[in-house]
Image (cartoon, rainbow, N blue to C red; front, top):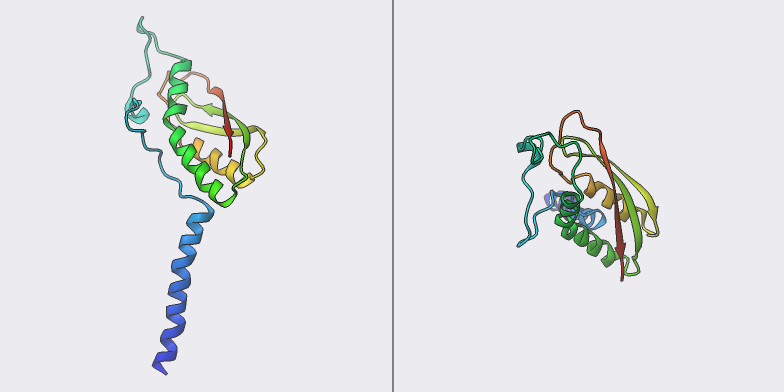
Length: 156
């Protein structure tokens, strides 16, 4: 009788263990992107004051160089996400373009897909979710939100 009670519990534990592995395969865990070794990193936006220009005036827009730098620093994270989806869908390829809105605090407030040739909506959604984690430098608090286009081309 005791042996019969242990068998279902063991089965449940085994299924639970495997289900967590499958859950990770279905949707890769979201994590804060790590800096790429050897690449310059930006200061933590939460610990910085709004940027000032050479004349001491508060900056109301981020420059293209900084925006490109943040995108480049997160490139490895996007590539890893693509590789994980490509393992399940070897034919995954195409172009996707996002419209990314950044508030004055440096946080991404909105990511909108404006064009997608990818035939994997789950991958596009995961990309969008990852982009929402990006951090930019702070600018003047009363500045308008800044919107940029971020295109990606994925090939086999």
